[in-house]
Image (cartoon, rainbow, N blue to C red; front, side, top):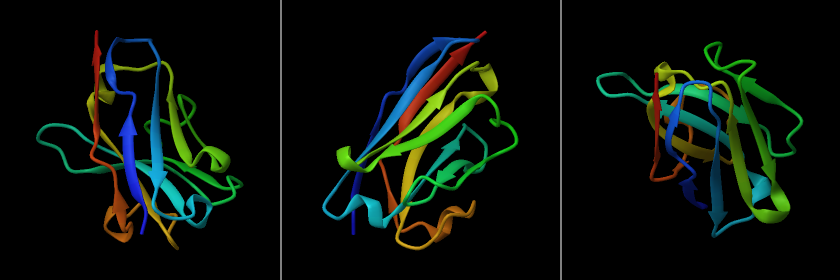
Length: 123
């Protein structure tokens, strides 16, 4: 298992940027795929992006494609989500997740989750 601590959320105006971090401990980080999900009040948890263990494959939800970039630094045991051109609809609690074997968009397939970090985008 791996323990995840996500951070970097905050409040930003529309058009601004934030970078979320997902620090891993307790296991070899590069054994895991990393994904980001978000959940807004009254909404279901939604897939945002994922990245393979090597960083060679990435996937994005259509709603964030071209604005968000997922990356990882295995030497630092940390994953990242760079969020640019933020819009109010991006407001949500963001969670990083990791899986030993899964890279897709189904949240229940991920075994490890961070505690979440709040992103608020004002117009």
